[in-house]
Amino acid sequence: PRALRSARTRDALRTLPLERLLVETDAPDTRFAGSERGLPTDLARVVREIAEIRGTPEEEIRETLSATAQAFWAGARSAERVRSRRRL
Image 1 (cartoon, helix red, strand yellow):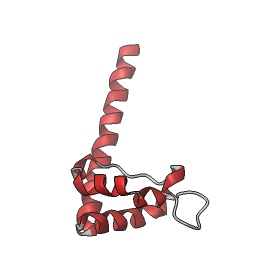
Image 2 (cartoon, one colour; image 1 turned 180 degrees about the vertical axis):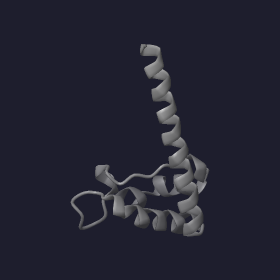
Image 3 (cartoon, one colour; image 1 turned 90 degrees about the vertical axis):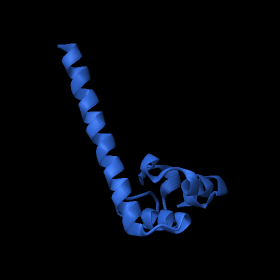
Image 4 (cartoon, helix red, strand yellow; image 1 turned 30 degrees about the horizontal axis):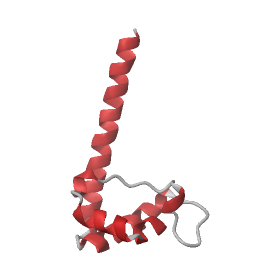
């Protein structure tokens, strides 16, 4: 995607801890050339590009990003339960 072409983004991808990254494909700047919009199926391509930029095996990128996303959404669900209880 265009977002991965910027030098600033590539530098950030090289230096940030992988556990601090979340990826998504529905933002306007995450679409690939020739696509009208980003699609969930583009995640594999995003992972491939991040692996190339970082010089890290794709499997490691995929596993870490998946674990990070699961932890994020588990925390979001937990926070929502806490907010719901406060409303009672």
